[in-house]
Image (cartoon, rainbow, N blue to C red; front, top):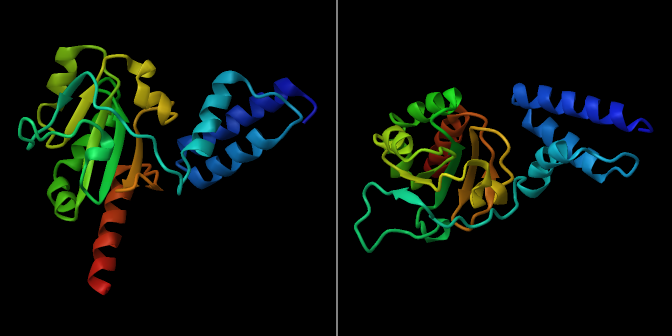
Amino acid sequence: MSDEKKFNEITEYLFGYLEQHSLYKASEYLALKVLTQSSCTVHDDLAKQLESYRAMKKGNIAPDILFEGDVIMPGYESGHAPQKLSDISSSYTLIIFGASWCARCAEEISQILPLYDKWISNDIDVIFVSLDVEKEVFKAFTSILPFISICDYQQWDNNAIQDFHVFATPTMFLLDNQRTILLRPSSVQQMDSWVDWHIQEGYNR
């Protein structure tokens, strides 16, 4: 705690290890402990990663997202399309931050396609926020997606990216219709498990 250089090196290593192994509860615990200690200063880049867990933890209200730049909205009629996240009428919304150049993003998003009908029938919609920088690449990547995709080609300077404290792709947030953060899924498989639990809970009521 008295050696600032070592403190940052160890914190960065531990946080990276926990993230890599999808140990998000432990990541959140570490982030909150480090941000509330007063002995050492945390480097800016690391502080931004840690802050994402304090600002965007389960139970917090997520920021609204304006649909700026290019917006692809399958299934919406002209003049009736939502202009921002808070216009979405579904009970739940999964926000995915990713890009065509992110191999894991492509893998995760492809897994949504056979699940989407089940999700939407249970009032769970999806919004993809892209970090792409080229219009044609974004449009080609999202051409087969049945849900809203948005991109302003600002990459990490995108307002939603900064508001949601996103520092890696893919990053996902499951919100209710009040924008309360219910879950930060580490994968589509985890998200689909939540959907199955939600369906089962509905049958049990």
